[in-house]
Every structure is written in C-alpha cells, then in structure tokens.
Length: 426
Ligand code: AMP
Picture 1 (tube, protein in one colour):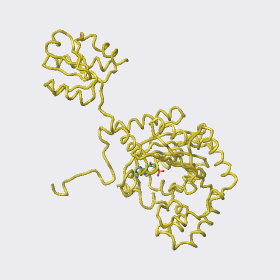
Picture 2: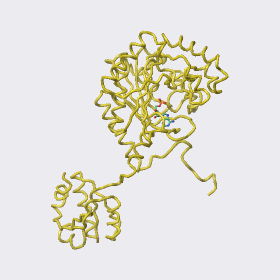
Picture 3: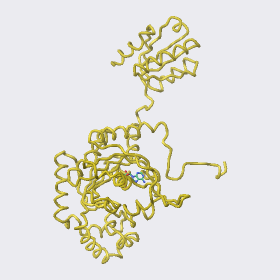
Picture 4: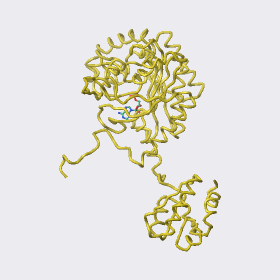
C-alpha cells in the first residue's frame, strides 16, 4: 500500500477499542460514585475554548501554552484552542454562570478528552482523558485534604497498590516573589552548570528548574534554597494543617520540596500521585493537583480561593490492563448453544429470559456446529453450556452441561433460569 493511502489515527492519538472500553467505564463509574458521595456535581464544558483563557489562566511561559496548545482560527476569526486542561475551563464556567452567588464551596466534577502537542511516549499522548475535581470558594485546608482523599479513594477502589502521594507547598503571592528572587540569584550564579532549557527558565519561570529531570541540573537543584523554608506564616499554617488532615485520615504522603508542577496558577498546596509497582514505575504521575487561589481573579472573576486535581485516565487504564492480563475480559458464566431452526428460535426467547433475570449469557446464534459452539463456550470461560437440540426444542427442555465435569442434566425450559440462578448461587 502506498504511504499516502494508509490512513491512521493522528500521531499521539488513539482509538479506544471495545476490549478497552470496560476499563475506561470502570474508572468513570468509580469517579462518579465518589463525586456523588463527596457532593461534587457533574459539569461538561466545550472541548474548545478561547485560546486566551488558557494563556491568561495557565501562564504564557509554561510549556503547556508555549509549546503544547492546539490552536486555530475559526472562519469567523475567533482564536480558539482545543482544551489542554480542565481547571481553566471549569473556572471560566464558574465565573460565567455566576456560581459565586451560590452557597460556597461549589464543587464540580468532570471527565473527558484533553489535547496537548507533546512528544508521544509511554503514558503521554496528544489526546488523552482526565477525571477532574474542582472546589471553588473554600480557602480552608480541609478542602485540599478532601481532594487528595477523593483521588486516593478512587485509586483504592480501583485496587491500585502502593500509592505514593507527593506533596509540597509553593507559597502564594506574599512569599513566592521573594523566594523567586532568591532562587533566581542562586541559579544565575550557577548558570553554566544548567541545561539549556533551565538557562532559559531562570528568566521565564525559575521554579521550573526544580522540576528538571536532566542529570546535569541535579547537583544545582540539590543545593538550591527551598520554598518550604521561606513560606509566609499564612502558607506555613495552611500547609501544616493539610498534612495534619492527611495524618488524621492516614494517607501515605511524602514531602517533595522539588514538586512545583507545570502550571502558573497554583498557590500553596501542590500534589502528585504515583504507583510504586512494576506497572506504575515508568508511567509518571497518575494524578496531579493543588490549590489555585489566584486563578478566578486572573480570569476576571471575584477573588475566590479554589483547589482541585485531575487523574490521567490512560495511565490508570494502562495499570488496570496490565493487572488484568490473566483475566478473561469476555468471561461469561453461561453459554447458550443450539442446533437446528426450531432450537434457534427457542434460543432467542430463552436468551431474553436470562436478560430479564439479569444473568449475562454468551451465544453464537449464527453458528450451527455444536463443536464450534462448545469451543466458543470454553473460550469465554463458561461454567455451564445450555444445549438446545432439535429434540429438546420439541420437548421444551434444555440440556445443562457442566463444562468443568462434563456432567449433563435435562431441565424443563421454564425452569432453567431458576435452576441456573440456584447453581450460580444468585
Ligand atoms: P496535569 O493536568 O498536567 O496536572 O496532569 C494531570 C494528570 O493527567 C497527570 O498526572 C497524568 O496522569 C495525566 N496526563 C497529563 N498529560 C498527559 C498526557 N500527555 N498523556 C496522558 N496523560 C497525561
């Protein structure tokens, strides 16, 4: 096939195939249940927004805005962006719909696709999905802890193991400017020992140097002044309280003074979740978030404290999939096999009886050979095969074959659902 006619999904974007949909659904269901319990209401925002929303909200000198936004001009001349993140979009909706007039905090929850022009690699896509929780109008540290608790509970519910929560405080506009100056002076004096990206960052966004993974920058990072030592009283107390809440609910966190996160709008608490297992090791952060007390004002809303976080669905799916490798995703306890025209017709009716009784069954009604059908029953890991031949169809009965022992019993057709229920202990 010549190269031109070979159409594929765009680089870094992927189809979610039927066999993977169950993992996505499970994550969305678990998150929705958690949102319900903690009083976060579902909201959906458009996939495109005014590009300015992100450049203003997230910050012009962040990688996200500088390098990763998908932007385009519409026929009408509007300059729009495919949303690269949720926080600015949900904040825009909070302001636009006057939600500051509602009883605070306003707690919102959403999930869906995001777009970032990144270099595709393991766990890093150009279209990916997040589940996102945001709480507006609450400055108390208890909300920071609750957001962390929600993501912890979601991962626990999804049976993630060895979850590590890294946490830091990056101060606010009281203490951060002074620290930034201190850090900039320190970095300038060591500029030659930094990678080229970090040399640029000294001027544009010095905090990001602390985040750099380049080998070359590590010794400079290790000796750098730490923000945690320069927090103002307000930020210090806030951070202490968050940690006390986490202690109270016994969540396993680790202080990471180098955690600064990529986006400008964060204030005070920032956090990330990792899974310390073979499957999780190379995936990077599963969840990220923090407090963003300055964002609503930057977006021309009233001064409103806020906190939130987001989990990367593809990364969660990757781990869930890895773990379920040995589980047959198509597993069904019951397989309905038939032989002959009359049996086929009766099978249709019988399969309806099982659906009404809420017992999933597998079948291959299009197949005629019993051998092929029993092989299919094996494949889905069926415990019982129900066999409807010509004779059974005429006698209104069904053969129930125990696939483990080969034992067969003939049961009256109108009793078969209750018999199966009994055998499956339902
Ligand atoms: P962020 O919005 O950058 O704070 O990211 C929150 C979470 O989304 C991260 O912890 C990742 O799990 C996930 N994530 C971020 N960027 C990507 C990407 N390009 N591909 C897949 N997942 C991502």
